Image (tube, rainbow over all chains, first blue to last red; front, side):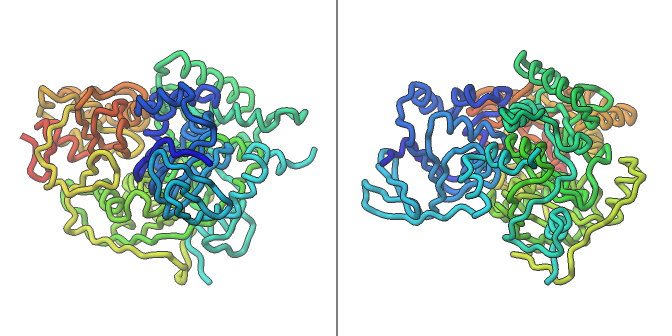
Length: 162
Length: 430
């Protein structure tokens, strides 16, 4: 069971998730400080560790559009949060998978901030409303990277033996 | 079954006779580009080798390009230290396609790659920058990736688990009216497709208008294809591609052009007639919030920006200089011009454009990305508005979430600089 800690609209850009002016910061240990930096109140609560790991950022369509900056994924991942969105922009989706940020594509999701959800293998259940929404499976090519624990371990597996 | 250009390129690079949309392939990478985020790539690359007992050595240093452009010259000790670390890596591994902070060979990555002939038709290009779609202008399959994925490419020499994208065919016909051009075309297309309309898809550009378009214009439309979500925009290589690579990039070795099969399968075909296209404006705060200029004429602007990987090339500066020559930028407007490369800056100096723009009141800055994404110079104040030839207008893009950005062509930007309000260049600035 996980709580929706913020509900966002469509086309949440990587500039929103991680503003460009913090891009000189690259370390996954440092990027979370600037997660949604321009949403001052939310950022303050994130930094205060006000949310349980596993809590949900609820996005609309085209979540993570824009830049290839990996900081957008590492910043969210630093808090152990999960992204549930109607659909996700390609580069952000790939970055999330590469870094082990859990993302769930749920095209018909209907939930509000404060609702409690459970993420089952094939559907999202909104415990607050009792409604169930199917999860769109990730493309098989990407599942292999998730199964390996991210792209770095996956790449290690794929390296030629000495 | 026939193949699209992207399918053909991916088939060749993956050693397969035939691929189709949805297939998963692992294409060999011909060119791997990074900018300052190479600092993160280097971290991740070393992490891949951590504990392996092997030295972290890129698969082929000759296929790696690193161009400093996002924060040049460095705006902070952090950036300066990142750049220093990258220089050390470049020296250690003999990366020749390295462009440091320099007035002669420096510039924005998406201009440097074409300018120096690093990209060829049929190449698979990856870059740790979303606007890597630009290089489809030269007939390459070119797409943006994150830093960790680049570390994987540096290790393996191929991109893992790439899904072959379905292709949207865009056929453009007609002649641009005066003061209307490629930027207006791509803004119109993004407005039509929406910001997610091409997510996970490639856009292949065709039609008489594209055939007649210069490589400079093709770079504009491929650059901004990502704003419709596209994995890649691509103009199949043709005579203009050969002309550009031979005459402007100085390429002397063999060039092979790849064209789609006549029976290639497209997910969708979009036809655009540009005969009646007017200047287009993307309004705050989304790139697909596109309106014909007539709907926003007269909107007050505080800062005009001409430059970037989208519209900082010589033809863009020529357009701006022609409109501003002998005129003045309005007193309550700041005008920033940043050419896309040192070479272009030099050409604009020789041709007098820089002088024209400065005399009109513009600040001509060094080549780089800074103002476009609010990382370095040109930040907006609260409640201020910019009119810019760059490629994104997300909330906060120019460094301040309390400001707004309109996107337009160089002609609209220059005409509006004179008046201080969004102005249709066909009516002229006064």
